[in-house]
Length: 365
Image (cartoon, rainbow, N blue to C red; front, side):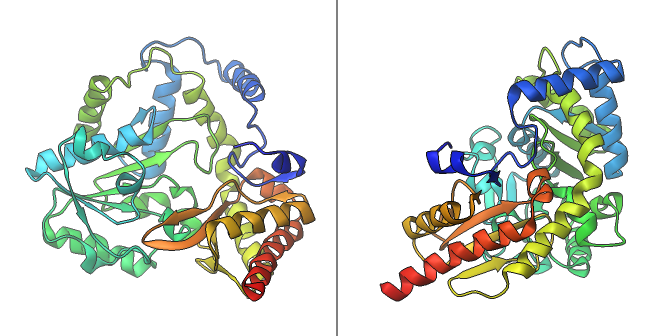
């Protein structure tokens, strides 16, 4: 999305969240990285960069093997298909806010023949007793995007894993934004967090800011079958670059910055405080994301964002989530390099101006 008002702002918090969003700039940085790392031409995902990335991700997530996919949508559909086929049960458990339920045009149903079983409540994170009585696989999103990046507490996550084990039910983690999980659960690293999940998906462009791509991690048999489905679905790209080398680059560059992103999100939420017409969820933020929910309709919310942009030269975001199950408009704010480099008081002030506009509109109405 491009708008004259957004262009006038000197601080833009919309996607992409980092400082190398320009395509030409990115390609130059990838080229430099490839030369430094000795990475060259590769064909059909069989080269050094893919092998290096898959091995690194398997180790990072504590799984025996990993497979690169061009998109998370392809990766998660394949994971669900494999697990449901192995279980002999085509039912797939999904939280109502799941990306598969909301944003993939029913791909798991139309492409993979799976039946959706909704489990849990839109307005909260999943609990052990939300797991379906029967399903070939249940997908647990950590963190839950449409709850502002909310997470169950550690004891609840352990209980979810135990409940799935008691039911003989396979769990797959939608870890699109899993990079911040160790900051949410101090003392628990990614291998421990991923333990109990038969497979794990992570995105390289969400939070880390790569140009694209995803990873599926699991045991050796799972990875071998996932690689087969990758080919069957047309995902065996003729060339791995720029996406695969770019994923390696941003892992080196940003993985260590994630705790700072989380700390900045929490600092902003504290700075905003309690103001009429606005709620931050979750509060405090658990990862480097939060939702700013406005007590108004979408046109008023957009006008409030624009008022904040005019007053502060901060563009907070392009759109507001607005679903029939959760009709209050929610702006998603994710902290990356640009927000980390900025004066947090500017962001706090922009959010407060947005809230003041909503409160004023409510009073005048």
